[in-house]
Length: 281
Image (cartoon, rainbow, N blue to C red; front, side, top):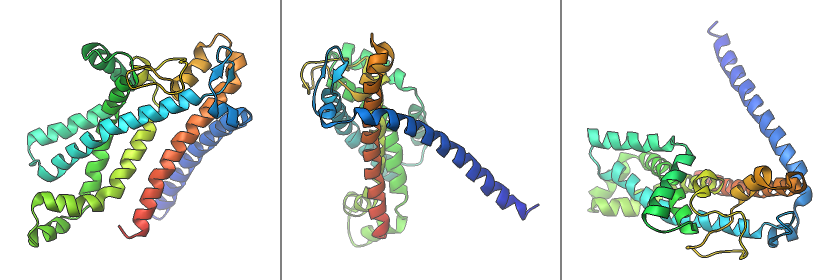
């Protein structure tokens, strides 16, 4: 029985992996086969027309890019700084452990809760209104726990001997972190940040109450204005449009573009990890 145990474990793992890959292939095949005919240069470079039944999705693409960049500007510096403090400076106490537990619990909070919190805090409390900035701050809060966790894990992978060697040659703790620890952990940190941003780019609920709009005239708004986004645009075309059957091909095309955007972000993260492994980091 002991000899069969590894084969049973591997067989179960391969079977479960095959099931997941099968359904993933079915979903991707359905989206690609129905969305590919809608893809064209006009589709990705023009604005919607005729009540969203014709035209393209350029404002939604630009809005997604802008809100993702805003999210990165909000969450990345705070997330990395918090992870550095927790891993490099904070003592192992009940308060530190409680803080880590709270951060991990925040990772499991439904995104709709972040949307309602962003509505109460940024839109109404801070009087920022429904805008790209409010949506970016809300997505930043949603992304913060993930960036903190992945950054802290990347810092933990650096051996303690590396820090001790830097201190032994006369460097201060700050200098050892800045010049030795962070450059070594940077690929892992960037990988976590990019993967987190790819998740944020596909979120609908947090931006639904804080700044996204079904349609705007300008392809790219300012930070204090509403904006269009691919996830919300897809949601509206699929469920709320008055002519759902007419715009269904456009909905599939939008879904395909959104998948390609997230896929490119994930490929970027994997490439960073691959270069790091190839260089022996």
